[in-house]
Length: 135
Image (tube, rainbow, N blue to C red):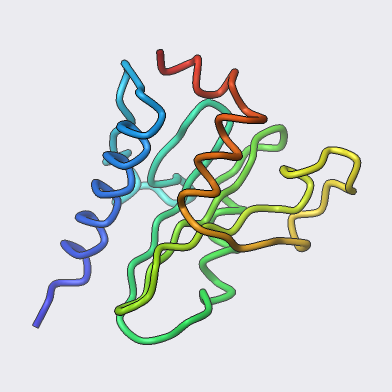
């Protein structure tokens, strides 16, 4: 039987490493270890992006509470991202729609889900300043 805390920490490291490599970060993303002791902390922070990572066995859609958790951890002028994976399914990322187009209303309840690769394209295309904070 797999320890869920170890599985979660391993997935957080996997995502941090994937973002570090894909975005060529000089100041690498690292897990926020205080998250285990303090409520309302994300797993990772990239510039203004507050990222929560969830790895779960069965399922296809993230739990509503996961999105609530990342929203609670994200300050007012920052962006939430939920990166999740279920067994035998690809890694997905949920973000608010307004992060794709700033002409859309800023409402964290209107979201879209896409691949990790697409999230990286989004970051490189529209959020260069957030990446630069790690160069």
